[in-house]
Length: 504
Image 1 (cartoon, rainbow, N blue to C red):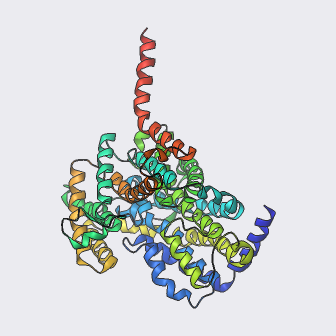
Image 2: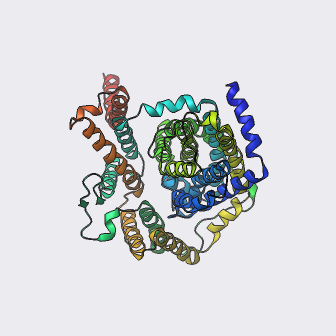
Image 3: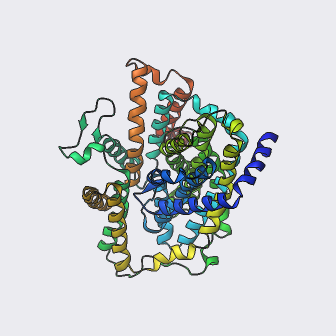
């Protein structure tokens, strides 16, 4: 503990230098912008900026790149809340209650609690990285393909608890999402699947294209089809004080923020989709714990505070396996390992000893970067909410332009723009029949992870499915998934039994 505090103090001395402060500010500012713009993403941005790191020292370059990553986690919530376009996959859950709060004139508290929750989660997760990182990183080493399979199955079961309407509809959308994740080339055999002869589909469907179509374009079509003649999307208060969360909001959000910080940090240690899984796991947990679960989906602030806190905590926790073990927990961390290797540095257990200025400088910069995000974004709340006062006839074309530019910037391809339009119509039709696209999107993201991990497990087990339940961790996760899936039936049986006892 004392060594960690001494190292953190040394890190602040490095991170607070004028040059590193500027690179940290640049990183979080770029990250926020990247999170707002759907289609670009932190992975592409960091990859594009790698040549700049050639001229920087390793500490400064990693400070900037890490700022882009956790800054994007907050930026993704802005468009999710305001116009129901998730800037990042981990912000999909935020659309459910965040945008509903905006429609009810509470965009300011939604954005405010997202900013404050992200800051608290960032501080908690960074302190966790500093104080317990090397020890808890060993947990990630216990996870093999079978454990990842069980974790993703649990995630898919949690997906069915998200969305409006009966659970059977969420199950249907999750199944369609799993099918959509199989479009493209088989990851092992290389054969094409469900491409229907379209060459561009061999790379599979892009998550950004799906998000912009099913949420952004579909929202514009829904606004166009609405019978109300209102020229304003929602009513929104003016002035920073009226936009900040009040005492009631803080009372409702304090528990979700605390639980989301812990849950996000724990899941962020595990490779593959930590921020995404933690966001909707937090959402499901908060709805289960709520006294009135029917509020979720109708603008419950807990549905914003929990997921936004969890995905930011997970983003920062993903630096534990990177810095302590040299293991990338997601694609972004893989790119950062490449940036370090370009500098001739191999991350791993000896990094804190051999390069303490890098290890502790980056950790200290996360605390500074989270404070910068808070200072940058809270004063801008009136600017963000002002978008809601733009008339629909102006805002709708801007959203469409936003989606078209974002789609085309992915691969400079008109095909992606066409796919956004197609999925926009699909999303609009889904809304007409009251099918929520959120379970589809989440299952789509998890589908690739599930296929990869389960096929790796079966290869290791020589085709025997028993390998999935032979180890305690995977068996426990499968049991938990079964319990969550069967919980409504168990509750129904319990109510019937208790009701029968009362009548006798």
